[in-house]
Image (tube, rainbow, N blue to C red):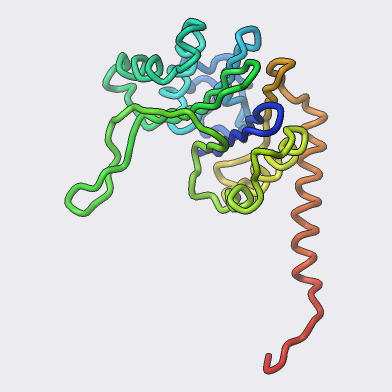
Length: 237
């Protein structure tokens, strides 16, 4: 389980996610060998030179395979990568066909955001089941992958606006991932983030990430204090 979010804003796209892994490095498969040998490691695949960033969720072996192959697609295919992503998924062996999701940013003068998933939910005999059905779409504003029921996504529904400058979306995205960890600490932990704008794709350094997480915790505490400090009384209560 993970949570990845991508938000378009005024000037670019912010991609943020957690770092928690349930598998040690030696069990993660060939697509994640560059990760740290611990429980917190990247879930992004990025080619800064070509301006492509991909966040992975779900089965990380399947998602990692799709992401690595997606980075090899030609520039023409990257204009609309969904057909190529579907073809990559089509070539997967039966044992590789697991539930996976990817959020893909193709940077440029106007950065574009795409979401892709390998399975869909259908109703059979009044029961929801997951079936193999790779598909994706271009997203006009916001997309998430992973823990789609996490209550931290409330902040997106309530306050997200794609007209916000990406400089303001950075702390907003950090706050969402921080709150997601509070709601699901067994499976979500840490933060990584990339900013995609006219200057390229760049990781936010660790010292900035630490400041963002500290600020998110302070904001979370201050919101709680507002409710705990409420003094007004009401009749008949």
